[in-house]
Image 1 (cartoon, rainbow, N blue to C red):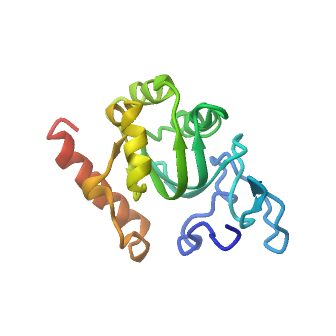
Image 2 (cartoon, rainbow, N blue to C red; image 1 turned 135 degrees about the vertical axis):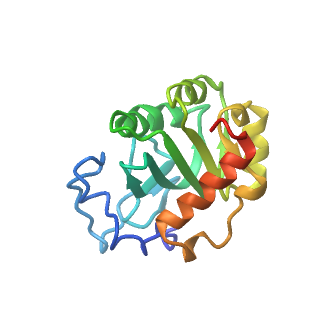
Length: 191
């Protein structure tokens, strides 16, 4: 797991540690020191802790004018024991929604497992977005199946056309527009 790094090619255009509105503003990274672990396995130092022992994240991009952010995750999403959705909602999402972000793209190809509980925090998050949305991109099929078992698909868009293999070849603004177009197509003209 220590070889899996957050996507870094957008750093020249956005760095969450240099963004004064980011919850990670001012964080200093030591890329020579591996200190954070998930189940005893070290993870790359570029990942950010947000309150979960089994799930870490990275804010890859935030655009306050357009009102969206792109978040990448690694680890096990565990709502049953660690209440990861509560930590994400309270420590990250509410921070961004305070700054007028209402569209969230969650990159999930490094989420290795999902354990659900109830869907209350997902519902709360969804209801607070107004005309915004949540898109889960590149989540593994078995993770999507487990999320569906807990009714999370009522609040988060995932699967199908949101499996975007070439996302790393796109600029963040182009990637956002692609996801936005897919969401608009799914939800219809009201979005």
